[in-house]
Length: 112
Image (spheres, rainbow, N blue to C red):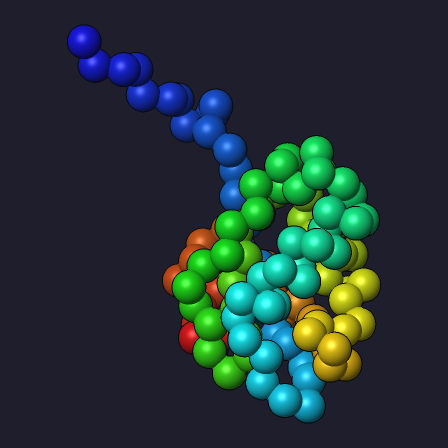
Protein backbone atom coordinates (compact mmCIF):
# COMPACT_ATOMS: atom_id res chain seq x y z
CA UNK A 1 0.00 0.00 0.00
CA UNK A 2 1.42 3.38 -1.03
CA UNK A 3 1.66 6.17 1.54
CA UNK A 4 -0.46 9.21 0.83
CA UNK A 5 1.26 12.30 -0.55
CA UNK A 6 0.96 15.53 1.42
CA UNK A 7 -1.18 18.23 -0.05
CA UNK A 8 0.73 21.39 -1.03
CA UNK A 9 -1.18 23.37 1.58
CA UNK A 10 0.17 21.09 4.32
CA UNK A 11 3.83 21.28 3.29
CA UNK A 12 6.28 23.56 5.06
CA UNK A 13 6.75 26.82 3.18
CA UNK A 14 10.38 27.73 2.74
CA UNK A 15 12.51 30.74 1.92
CA UNK A 16 16.09 30.89 0.73
CA UNK A 17 18.37 33.41 2.43
CA UNK A 18 21.69 34.35 0.84
CA UNK A 19 24.34 35.57 3.27
CA UNK A 20 27.88 36.88 3.02
CA UNK A 21 30.66 36.48 5.56
CA UNK A 22 32.92 39.51 5.93
CA UNK A 23 36.23 38.74 7.63
CA UNK A 24 39.93 39.42 7.21
CA UNK A 25 40.72 35.80 6.37
CA UNK A 26 38.76 32.99 4.78
CA UNK A 27 36.92 30.79 7.27
CA UNK A 28 35.96 27.17 6.65
CA UNK A 29 32.32 26.51 5.81
CA UNK A 30 31.97 24.03 8.69
CA UNK A 31 32.99 26.70 11.22
CA UNK A 32 30.50 29.15 9.71
CA UNK A 33 27.71 26.56 9.91
CA UNK A 34 28.50 25.84 13.56
CA UNK A 35 28.57 29.54 14.45
CA UNK A 36 25.23 30.24 12.75
CA UNK A 37 23.52 27.27 14.39
CA UNK A 38 24.92 28.20 17.79
CA UNK A 39 23.82 31.84 17.48
CA UNK A 40 20.30 30.87 16.39
CA UNK A 41 20.12 28.48 19.35
CA UNK A 42 21.31 31.25 21.70
CA UNK A 43 18.76 33.73 20.37
CA UNK A 44 15.60 31.65 19.86
CA UNK A 45 16.46 28.36 21.57
CA UNK A 46 16.34 24.75 20.45
CA UNK A 47 12.60 24.85 19.78
CA UNK A 48 13.01 27.93 17.59
CA UNK A 49 15.84 26.24 15.69
CA UNK A 50 13.58 23.26 15.07
CA UNK A 51 10.72 25.51 13.91
CA UNK A 52 13.07 27.36 11.56
CA UNK A 53 13.91 24.11 9.75
CA UNK A 54 17.40 25.41 9.09
CA UNK A 55 19.24 23.74 6.22
CA UNK A 56 22.54 24.81 4.67
CA UNK A 57 22.87 24.40 0.93
CA UNK A 58 26.20 23.44 -0.63
CA UNK A 59 26.46 26.79 -2.44
CA UNK A 60 29.57 28.14 -0.68
CA UNK A 61 31.66 30.42 -2.84
CA UNK A 62 33.73 33.53 -2.02
CA UNK A 63 32.49 33.57 1.59
CA UNK A 64 28.85 33.53 0.42
CA UNK A 65 26.29 30.87 1.21
CA UNK A 66 22.59 30.04 1.16
CA UNK A 67 20.28 28.94 3.99
CA UNK A 68 16.88 27.35 3.61
CA UNK A 69 14.50 28.36 6.38
CA UNK A 70 10.82 28.35 7.22
CA UNK A 71 8.96 31.44 6.03
CA UNK A 72 7.69 32.22 9.54
CA UNK A 73 11.19 32.35 11.06
CA UNK A 74 12.88 34.69 8.57
CA UNK A 75 13.11 37.71 10.88
CA UNK A 76 14.45 35.68 13.81
CA UNK A 77 17.08 34.08 11.59
CA UNK A 78 18.21 37.43 10.19
CA UNK A 79 18.45 38.80 13.73
CA UNK A 80 20.61 35.85 14.76
CA UNK A 81 22.93 36.41 11.79
CA UNK A 82 23.50 40.01 12.82
CA UNK A 83 24.50 38.92 16.32
CA UNK A 84 27.56 36.99 15.09
CA UNK A 85 30.70 38.96 15.89
CA UNK A 86 33.39 36.27 15.96
CA UNK A 87 33.93 32.93 14.24
CA UNK A 88 36.87 30.67 15.10
CA UNK A 89 38.56 33.46 17.13
CA UNK A 90 38.45 35.84 14.15
CA UNK A 91 36.33 38.96 13.85
CA UNK A 92 33.54 38.33 11.39
CA UNK A 93 30.26 39.86 10.29
CA UNK A 94 27.47 37.96 8.56
CA UNK A 95 25.32 40.06 6.22
CA UNK A 96 22.19 38.94 4.45
CA UNK A 97 22.33 39.54 0.69
CA UNK A 98 18.82 38.62 -0.30
CA UNK A 99 15.74 36.54 0.36
CA UNK A 100 13.65 34.62 -2.14
CA UNK A 101 11.20 31.77 -2.42
CA UNK A 102 12.87 30.58 -5.62
CA UNK A 103 16.42 29.22 -5.42
CA UNK A 104 17.48 30.06 -8.99
CA UNK A 105 16.42 33.69 -8.60
CA UNK A 106 18.50 33.97 -5.43
CA UNK A 107 21.53 32.37 -7.07
CA UNK A 108 21.40 35.00 -9.81
CA UNK A 109 21.11 37.82 -7.29
CA UNK A 110 23.91 36.54 -5.05
CA UNK A 111 26.35 35.68 -7.82
CA UNK A 112 26.59 31.93 -7.15
